[in-house]
Amino acid sequence: MRISVDSARVACVPAAILAGWAGVIVPASAETAQMETVVVTATRVATPLTDLLADVSIIDRAQLEQAGMQSLIDVLANLPGVQVTANGSYRSNSGVFLRGATSSQTILLINGVRVGSATSGGYSLENLPLDRIERVEVLRGAAAALYGPDAVGGVIQVFTREPQDGLMRSATVGAGTDGQRKLGASLQGQTGDWGYSLGASHERAKGINVKLPGASGFNPDTDGFEFSSLDASLRYRVNARHAVSAQVLFSDGEYDFDGAPSPNPLSLNAATARAVAHPRLEQQVLKWTADWTADWTSTLTYGRSQDVSVNRYWRIADGAPAGASRFNTTRTQLVWQNDIRWGRDTLSLIAEQREDEVDSTTLYTVSSRTVRGLAASYAMKGQDWDGLATVRHDRNSQFGSFNTWALSAGYKLSPSLRLVGSMGTTFQAPSFNQLYFPGFGNPELTPQKGRAHEVGLRYQQGATRASAVLYRNRVQGFITPSTNVQSNLAVLEGVTLTWDQSWGATALSVSYDHADPRLKPSNDRVVRVARHVLRTQVSHRQGPWQSYAELRLSSDREDTQWPGRVTLPGYGVLNVGATYHIRPNLSLQARLNNLTDKTYSLANGFTTPGRNFFVSLNWND
Image (cartoon, rainbow, N blue to C red; front, side, top):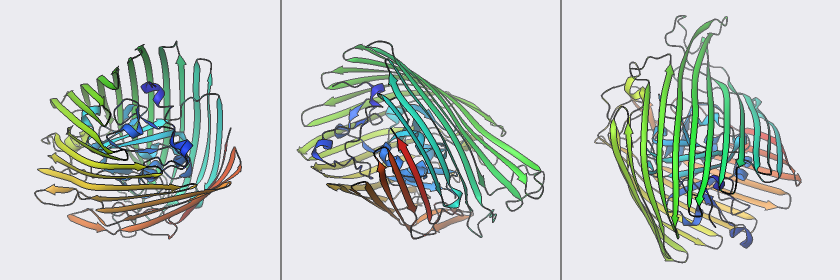
């Protein structure tokens, strides 16, 4: 059966009632095991999960609902190959490390369109409420040949809620410790050739103190947050061969942090200033999908996004305004993709253009950048082997032209065991902050160029799935984000092991990561990356009850502390929860995070939430 890229996003059906938390879908029965999961991000073409060569994790809607009021960054932390950082409270500045690569070396896509900040090079995952997300796909490994510059560690793609057959309505209300409050509602449906989706959510909390006592800039206050979001999707089937769609996403929030303005006309410090961050994300996507023939699909996508980052300051004593700063990026992207099938093979031809414009209170020597790219990939599928070859040419308005490539292959050693491997190159231009930020930037920085290799074994037999992946990524001219120092070389290497098993209504998932990214020639560790992370998740369904537990154990990590480094101790976090289905369309959920009230830090000087409880009532029909 042929599935278009557009329809794949609503065809991503989990293959099990209980999903494996390590990113592999675990069959719950023989019947559900036959239901195939379709993945888009790994090849840019809808591909069955069992046919993938790449290392991919999937977070489906059921897992997102189980997360309660956690953020997307918390959910990603449960995936193999993923490590996260967070500057304190429930919603605050955060980052992701895929296989040791930094946030600026990982691309974030929302509905197929790239979003993020051209100044920092990263993105604000705290802007994305879980209620408005239908599905997340995480591609680990070098992907610059498919997605262009910056995909050094991989790609995270978020799909917001989309039209569904019939009529679906849902609502949720929840409350928890530290003043947590949550409201959400959505409407999805299909009427004739028209499909629609509309949803809104609101979250807030009094929060916690984001910094540890004694840390630089400590203010003994409570740092809260408040976020509101709205998304809408409209799809029209023009005829049997053509469809058009429009999607809109708006997320606006604010959260407190400890800091002082610069410049500082009132001579404030962190203890005498109230500092509030105002992140906002806006995105509009228009898409046209055409099936010119039974074997030729063309998709034209236009996307526009705004990543807004505004900080405002007041004097605590009398509320006098003390200054403001802004770092805003407007990004437009046009992508034309043609997928042509020959039997079981597929040729994809891609042309795209991305323009970034910066609006900031900080004056940058250059405030805009254009990247144009052409790519071709060929996916081959044989009886016992398959492969993917990709070549790409990009032209950066600042750094000129460059080429990237990637080769992947897989071979069935037996009906249940498969050998996979890949190699490829990457390219990443320095961000505007790295080049031009006053007192920090260095206009002499050069692009980072990488060469990546990986090999893996995958096993699947009945309700058992396991995998082992060994990877190595050599990045020439690696730029450390916190210091902006360009090293000769960074070697990002490690191994990821996963095991997923189900016994009827019980599912177990275990993953282990050994990551050892190093800077050369100093051999220093890449900061904020732990060498060892073990994750275990178990869930069980009994009648109207479903219970689960999540355990994450992490070894220590290093972080910067002027003029040197500091070691952040390892930690263990245990989360438990349960869902009770009062009726088929009504459920009560309770979640207890950090059961042992562990105090730990993911970034130097910043704390994380202690033991916290959240309960919600969820309705859908």
